[in-house]
Image 1 (cartoon, rainbow, N blue to C red):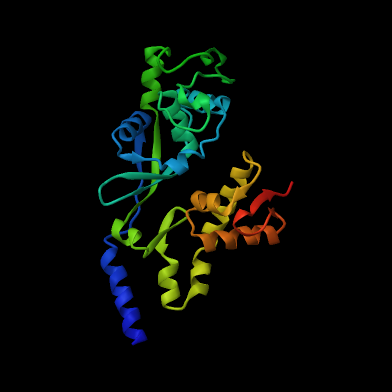
Image 2 (cartoon, one colour; image 1 turned 90 degrees about the vertical axis):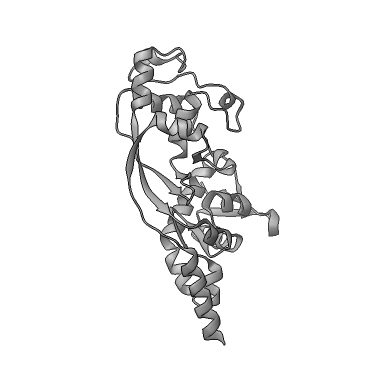
Length: 256
């Protein structure tokens, strides 16, 4: 009976996963802007709220684009509908969108177009917005490109039914599947690399916030409650974090 149940589950997983593969392509920032406006590039609201670069840092990124400096790749997921979901590269993409006048973010200044400040290679850029920037530089900026890397194709149904879950920058079989086949140890082993990435994201978040909760860490790392607790608990054991409170209200602070 158990064997049949496992076989049935595996068949279910196989039937849901249409294809998983990766590719890389270069796109201009103007294309990314158009994709975002047309809802072909999705930045989840919870992810948007992690946009933390100060105006000066955003400005220096825009300056680097105008000067044609290389840009690190961004990572997205492409669903069956062809929609891109951003999973890495938020600060860079958001800085460009902010400069172009896209309104999102928690801070008041992020609700208005970015005015350049803090540019140190070409200080004369300071004070410009996209609209006041000379046409030649507008075109140069719009044509600057970035590599979209690690594009993953997956069946949305598998994710929605809890058979797949986000594992850092990739998808993997969920804890539900591992628990069914009684290989939870293998599950933890497969998550090791993503746990390292999750710790980095938590520490980056704590550079800007005094504490983090399990719920916020879940949103940040894409893990479930138990997985997130495991990571936070390990960081406390390693002396990286310090818990404040007990139960659901526990907050975790960085140990200076």
